[in-house]
Length: 203
Image (cartoon, rainbow, N blue to C red):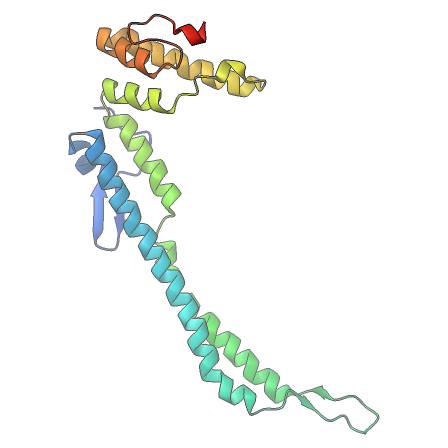
């Protein structure tokens, strides 16, 4: 088994932990995908709960300050009738206290947020773990499933070269694995029959 192309060998969300060794011990790709999806769902739910908590803090704090702010006029009369009303410094000070209280309370949950990763970051780690543990047959199956078979028709040179490199890797795996792999290739290729002959409508 190869070492993954990442220094991250353990992921955790609270008391939920998964290590690379544990992931590598899962026998099939399907089971690894299930474990991965379950772990990312925990993260997504956790992030959603933090967002809900932050919004609840803001709502509750504003509700607590509402009575005080409503009881204070926002403006006070000018020094004479010809002057426009001026902002009330008492109301401004109360509004400032509200904002400072909200910020302080929200900051208390920021360390929780910083201790987590976004789902796409977890996905990146899991992808690198998967590359290290998958068998050549699993790798071929995954590559066939995501391959752009029509890369040769692209006007974008970068897309064409990426597709060519991906196809070269697939062909190398097929050569390494033999007849069963060739059958997998034939079934995945849009213009080949199962026996490797070209489909009539692709001629």
